[in-house]
Every structure is written in C-alpha cells, then in structure tokens.
Length: 329
Image (tube, rainbow, N blue to C red; front, side, top):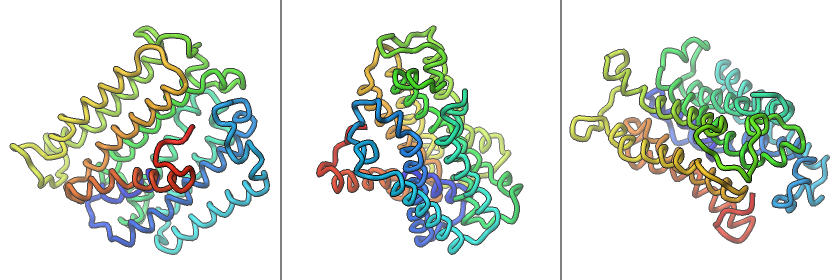
C-alpha cells in the first residue's frame, strides 16, 4: 500500500478530485506491482539470502516455494497489474509511465544492485515514474510534456525518489557484510564501511546519507518557494496564522523528524538496529508526504493516506505471523 500511496499522491498532486473507485484501482495495481517487484527480487536474491542467517526462514530459501512457482507468481502479478491499468486507465501516457516504473523495478533486481551506483538509484527511478503514472491516470495527459505543466507532480515524484534513495542507503549499510561477501558494489561496500565501525563526520557513507536528507528537505520546501514568488498558484486554502497548513505542519514535524533521523545515523549500529532505524525513518518521512496535498484531500484525507500502508501492514503481518508486530527482516 506504500507503493499504491505513491500513485495516489501523484494523482492528488495535479489538483483534481480523485474518485473513490480510482483509489481502489490504485490500491489493486499497487498490490500486484509491489508483489511483482518484491517477488522478482526474492528470486534474484536467492543465493544471497541463503547466506544471511536472519532471513533463513524465507519460503524460497527454505524450499517451501519452488523456483517455478516463484516465476509463475511473478508472471501472474505483472499480467494482473497491466490488465487492471489497461482496463481502467486506457491512456498511452499512463501506460508509458507505468511501463517505465516496471522496467526500473525489474532492472534493479536483475542487474541494478550489481552495478556501481545503480543500486542506489534504480529502484528510486521506478518509484519516480510510479508517481507520474498516478498523475497521468487521473489527468489523462495526452503527451509526456503535459506532465511538466504540473510542478506539484514533479515535486511529489522527486520526494518519493529521494525517500527511496535513503531507504536504499539504509539497506546498503544494513547488509554491508553480506554484500561485501557477494561483491555487491553498494556505496557502503565501495567506501569500506563495516558494522563494527562508527559512522562519523568524515565517513563518506554518513555524508552521502546526510546529502540525501538535505535534498529531501529542499524538495518538501520547493512548493512554498514557488508559491511565494508567484511562479505557480497551488491554490492553498487551508491556512493557519497566515501560513499554508502544510508549511506549518512541515516546520513543526517534518524538519525536526528529518533532523532526528540524521542524528540517529551517527555512531555504531548493528544490522538489527539498522532495520529498526529504516522502519522508523520510513514512518516519519511518509508522515509528511500526504500533507503535501492536504489542500486537495483535507486533514482527514491526509491522515487516512498516511495510515493506509500501516493498517495494511498490521493486517497482513497478523494474518501471516499471528502478531501485528514487525516480523524479522
């Protein structure tokens, strides 16, 4: 549902009223899209996962699922997602963005993680186009250039892009020992990081993470800069003491939580503590994203969009593991 949320965010960012059935469609497509990407990643990471004791319980690693079953499931998911998109959003631009998103998602698993720098940005590019797909689906753009006429769409897409780049930063430092063993050229491996080292001010891994956060904060502020100088009228209607509600929200919660994440990056970490950090940072960052379109969906709508992935997560983990708590990752 976080994948679906990216498309829904893109849809609302063009300023139109998104219909309830379109949200349901985004959720269905997001389900199959995410399943396709993750299942393909599991298949491609089979040899890697066998070497990590913490995830030895995975069904493919244990042999509960065969390679043929996994490949069949991947094929089913991609066909199901395209069937839904073509049926409900039969627009060429929508299909182009959706296809680009899937190409980058597949490229990440097949080749990206084993190519220098591609590990860090390939999946983020996929989610960038996933936001554009959501916008094109409800906007029915006739060509790709029309997307540039909606600056908020590009802002939302870049926010999700840097959001995912930072998640990949966390995954790289978390799995650095295994990645080094398998010659996966993540930044953490290339720059010589190990889990027994402190992340300090001179460590390029820390600097890289801080730079990502810097660009993320800047992207969150760009709508107000454009609105303030009169380049674009985003139609802000919800004000508090003369300032747009989202700006108030971001100044009170957005910037402090992002700075808190930067603070928590410093020092020595275990693989388990990195997992906890990635989950917490994801929650704090996604908390701000729905309020980017609060003028279109209202406060209740923004809270609902924020909670959507977590209600889904709690429901699924309860079904699979019998507990709403985070399973071992």
